[in-house]
Image (cartoon, rainbow, N blue to C red; front, side, top):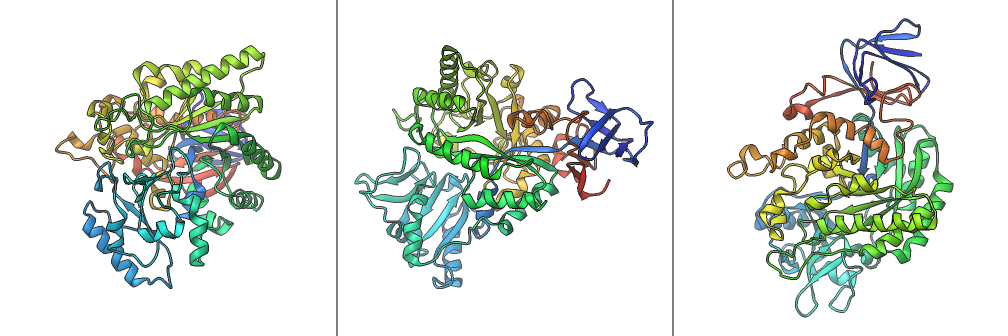
Length: 551
């Protein structure tokens, strides 16, 4: 038995929100309160702050690991400067050494709503395929050689309504690609060049990601979707070897109602092979729309420069309701990427319809819908998540200037200013959990939870601030959309556990729950919002064992 006393403990338990002592035996908490008169190993915490283990309820370990070989571009709005870097890099690394070059990132704002063209990239490199990823990770720019090797021309159908090759009037691809459409044709290219990128999701590739989680005090996570069979197999073996050190909640991606039975079968096979004390897989993942900055989010208002264009959506409410009905029959959850206000409304309508259908069948409603991002929500729909039992997930580090003003290529400034509002939903009683949704090693440091808390509490991005002459102190409007620290800590702990269906064992510090907790170098509740990212995680306890630092 270990006893940590003389601490500032924020329990996230409403009955006893603060305490100075916590005791645990093995991996189970046996006491949280004031003072201690029992035995055990006593540790004087000298007033340090203790929180429940942090939960990142939407992150992508597979994508982060697979991006390790990507080439980082200089951050510039100057296309000539960027292309000069691309050209020189290709000259330094000839085709024989690097048959395909993947660069990240170019600012989305570098080009207008028509995007970049392949001919411009051809001027820098034409002897091999080249891809430049945009900053938002939903658009990319490829050269002519890559399109040729992919076998994509004016007669090639787009993979889906979201995954498209932007085209000229005659149907020829321009070189601007949305939502990774190129990946459907990647094997053809790799076979042709006789080379494949180092993207095997084995234990060695994944370990740095999970080490980062442990270093950051993240003791549970939701995987945005499982990339490959190898990824989940590797995570399983890491857990068996005692190297995972996090509770992992995985999901299987589907595209439409027709492929849902196949994906459910895949999920069931994962459950049978890989479920452990720390690993569960019970969620289906859908990308319903794109992004505001790409112009392919599903909007209630038409694009300001393109009358009749309301963005893109993978399915309407009737089809989505059928997905929820099937998931509910299978006792599975659905986690949806939805960004635009029309997409949000479609989700709410679909859930409402599916719940009515379940009631008519006499079937209990057990599916937990989770809507991730929800960047712009019509005021009329703010109350619906609480009424319908929909959980909301927000990636806090996006709250400032990370994506700039690019959405104003499609939306009015008034609508842009209404983005990223969650206080109204929280006030109505909705469960709003917080996450990072990082997808690449380039930005993995931004998954540090106190970095995310700082951006959400200030609406200022310390790395990508908005123009201070236009936006005072570089704060993204509106000020009343700032999230307070108590809400943020709760969203990274107890509400995250609710989303993962793990709130019976974690998310708060109380008797009977698992001893997952973090020790900080200062009081998170007393730290000025603009200093939150400076908080250091001094110790991490997972399943009752110190895995980082010392107590």
